[in-house]
Each structure stands twice: as C-alpha cells, then as structure tokens.
Length: 166
Image (cartoon, rainbow, N blue to C red; front, side, top):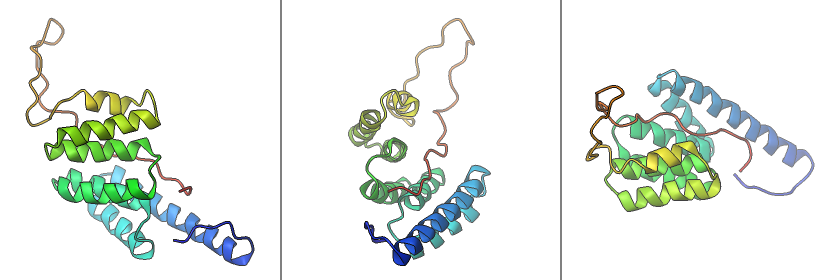
C-alpha cells in the first residue's frame, strides 16, 4: 500500500482500509493462537492478496511455516516482513528462530542481537539466543532440583504484535 501524508477522502479511505486489514490479521491471529493453523493461514493469505507486503501477515504466515516444519519458507516470509517493518523486535526473534531451525547459527544470533538492539531486555531474544541449536544442543547435566534433563528445546510459539502502524 502507498503511504503518504495526504488528507481528505482518499486519506480517510486508506486509513479505513488499514484498520480493516489490521482487524482481519487479528482474526487470523486468534485462529493461530487457538491452534487452527489452516484457518489462520487462509486469513493471512487473503490479506496478502490485498497487500502483498503487509508485515504482520507475512510475519505470522512465516511463523506458521516454521511451526509446520518449513523453516526455509519461514525465513523468506519473515524476511519480507522485517524489510517492510524493520523496527519490530518480535519479527527478528521469529526470523532468528527460523535461521536456527536451518542450522544457520550466525544469522540466528544476528537476528536475536538485532531484536535486543530494538528492545533491550527482550526476554525471548535473550533466552532464545542462549540456546545454541535445538537439534544439536548439549544440555548441561541436571543438578539437584529435578534430576531430569529437558525433553526438548523451547517450542516455537506465536510471537508478534499486530498494529496498524508501519
């Protein structure tokens, strides 16, 4: 969509369209958070038909790609989202997780570092960047507390914020 500082009827129409797209993406996110990935994917793809560079839809569709085991597609989609809106830490966290799933650790760490640059103290970036690689992690031997090692790495969860602002 074309951004501008126009006023008048055209500007009002663009604002209404942006608001409508935001509401639609939020509906998709509700499906996504409820685990209805097919429904969420369909919503995000409809948004991208109207606005192919809509960052929230690209980001969240990328998260779905990562969740279903397609990290290469996740990198492509989330990468486009980051290009469209480069100031959102959660998008860099998601991109970092996708690179991590591909074993691209340097790119992954760069993304988590960027997320921390944007939002210092970002808990997701801090904890995720500390995990060297889910598939190759050498977990420390358990100490007194539980006596058990983690069964798996932290799961991919929906990370992202939806906003009408670019």
